[in-house]
Length: 345
Image 1: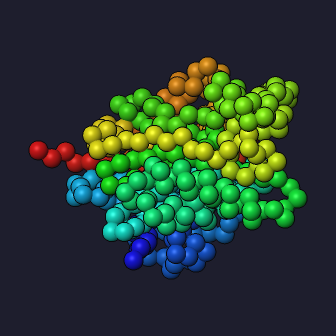
Image 2: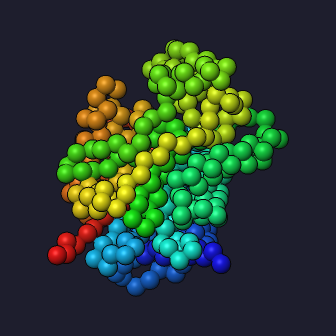
């Protein structure tokens, strides 16, 4: 019998000015229910869902097979200057076939929030139900991403307006960490104070992406605007996404996956300390620090912001507030995972 149960332990929330911040915590079993406030510490701060406020939360868990290892994670999400909120996110700590699985995902919608919300509700559920999820997670991820996209498109047939979403995910399973990305949100690790990209943006101007699109019969063109960008069919500024039925088969939900195995994962949790999921390359967090040619410098600055913050939720809020303060005009959502490993000999 496949078993999934959440094991989140809620950590204390605080407030950062000048942006108003409301804090929420969710359970995968019932995301809309409000638990009575427990005696401090720790405490849970609950409030109404003000669309102009930052929502944040988080939890902690132990690493499988390591009694001296744990990680804490935090998420923050903010509508920012956009008229509507199109971002969704998911954080899950579950048991699947007797193994602890941690899943973190940020879904950046475009053309509406419909696709991003669908991914929040279905992507991990479909992944954890795949028959080969535990023994061959990389193959399972590829197949589930494709099938989830197909299922969404089938469900959205009656919708007049086209919509889509990127997906940046990180999966902790046994001695592996698998990062799967579709679109242009980022997954970045902190290694010895340096920013190490764990995902690559899917942009139309990438030579391999342009070739793939043109071989499928599509095209990309330069679209003038406030900043100007290459777009698939003159419409979409990312070359891979869920949904976007009018741009199939040029825009696909085929993930690129990076796998950290046992030795590399040990290095990650002892030296990286941080994995940041969901920050955007262009209009999102810290985009105004440097021009596009200096991507690594921008992310190093992001790492410097959170390196000295022990609580992952606080770190995620710090990134959100900094992005907003530096002029981000987009929805802003990120997840931060902090690893704590006690060295043993």
